[in-house]
Image (cartoon, rainbow over all chains, first blue to last red):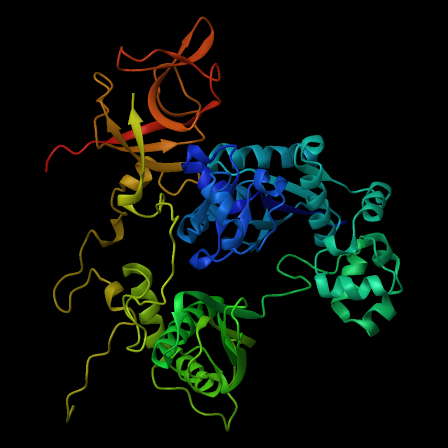
Amino acid sequence: MNKVFGLVDCHSCYVSCERIFNAKLMGKPVVVLSNNDGAVVARSDEVKAMGVKMGTPYFEIKNLVEKGLVIPCSSNYALYQDISNRVTKVISQYVPAYEVYSIDESFIDLTGINEDLEKLCLEIKSQIYRQVGMPVGVGVGKTKTLAKLNNWASKKWKAKTGSVVVILDSERQNKLLSFADVGEVWGCGSRTQKRLEIMNINKAIQLAQYDKKSLRQMFNVNIERTARELEGQVCFDLSEGPEPKQNIASTRMFGKRVYDILELRQAVASYAAKAAVKLRKEGMLTSCLQVFIQTSRFDDRPYSKATIIGLESPTDDTRELIAAAQAGLTRIYRPDTPYAKAGILLSQFVPKKGYIPDLFAKPERKNNDQLMSLMDSINKVQGAGTLRFAIEPESSSWGMRREFLSPAYTTKWKDLLRVKIT
Amino acid sequence: MLSQPIPLALAQIPTKAPIHGRAACGFPSPAEEYQEPPLSIDELCGVGKPSLFMLTAWGDSMVGMGVYDGDLLVVDRAVEPKLGSIVVARIGAEFTVKTYSIEHDIPVLKSANPAFKTIVIGEYEDSEIWGVVLWNLHKLHN
């Protein structure tokens, strides 16, 4: 049977979450800032129309904020995750299988559904708005890569398409492929796009029609698959894609500049601990930990250094990861430097289930699994950070700056939206 | 024969140690097989539905409607309002609690306070019904 995939995409996800509970943001230019209010990570349509780009540092738009032309929000991830979970729940009421791809995107499998798909997708869209208050768009195609491109088209021609684009015939699909730049294709990041353009592959259709064997030789098997998917040949099923989740990052901008190695030690330890929780949630073990520290890129003498620590044997033990992070930090720390950001990146994963340790590998610490699952369960119930390692501080000067933080409307009793009786 | 004490085995998650009906000695509970989950207010109110939200009310009481300052409102966004439903509405840049009604075949929002005018949805300002109040958790004892 021919496969049919869809992509449900939340429009300006973080801004839309804020708007559900803050009527003052309706129809106004709104941005959501990254952790520590560093840079723009989400924009309302009004802000996009003003030409503010994704990733713009906050200080560059501060004058617009002060003039009241743009309303800023600090990121409120507790709220965004709750709303995202609700959206997923609505999706699950309509389709037999789905994959949560990111906080604002889910792939759905529409194979074999004997209904008018456009009507079904419009229904999904209106129900998500009705039930949760989140505006979404849907793209449907023969492959995941095409579904994602068709979703891009649904956004580009929002008014004309009603934010739903279903394309299952080659003629219409090719028309869109000839229009779309290759950079809009899923899996073609800016670096890949540049290389493709040198080869005179500018439009998506040129990638679709390019010789597959040469693509594999010049790039990798994933670009070849992406090209095949553009032709309508399924290479990625649900939970598969050109960039599978193969690393976990935990990084932050500091609230103020940090010089002291002890403060850096605490920061990277708490990032390592956070990343370890995510790692265990994914059921993975990591073999490689990267630490980095950097000054602001706007500093007079910018300094940025990263180092990789290979772990003796794959692990998900927070203690091992903290120790590795500390060893890495010692290697790259340079005194008298105003650090603005630090981070941890875990990579080279193996699934924990079925993992057989190397005969000569360093043995796991005793009771690792019990200790870690106990910590995770306590922190889940009592709140993150309730039980932590001594090096992780309770709160600290490098903590986040969140000047424009909205309440946790859906997860804290004291933060519920107050509505006036009139 | 035991020659030395053996430590008790710890349950994997101490907070979730299983409770069995059978005591170490004595009779098994005759009711064990009939055990049912306890009543749940969450289930009653529909907590966990994607369309269910909780809000707090403030301001003048809705006399006769049973909504008072500080009450906890359980609101469903997906429910269709009926004549007389208490609703949360967005009127322009503000959320308010009002009564849903129909006058001359047009849906309107009525205020409990006679000082406020009846609002025709969408007449002056961009407005919408945000959700219907299903339950009001009003605390009686402090």
